[in-house]
Image 1 (cartoon, helix red, strand yellow):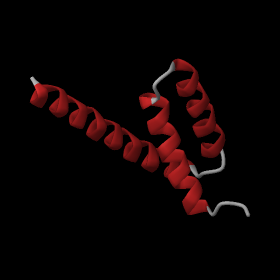
Image 2 (image 1 turned 90 degrees about the horizontal axis):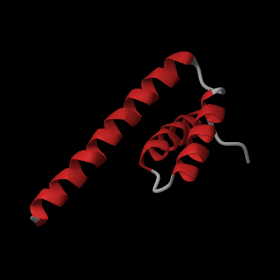
Image 3 (image 1 turned 45 degrees about the vertical axis):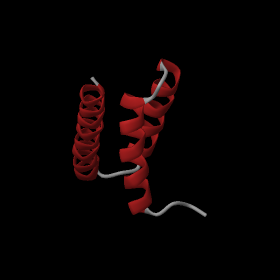
Length: 73
């Protein structure tokens, strides 16, 4: 079954986040390629919108990590 457009938007956002937060360069590159492939099926407007969503998610992840690391000290 082919994913819906909305699911592709979700997968695109997750792939962008994983491209930045992946534990290895190899995984990061793989996720970036997935994001590019998925994004090619989205409108430019939606790519921009979901890229912003991914950027916000990345900032939240970084903030959580920062707080966790500084709370432990």
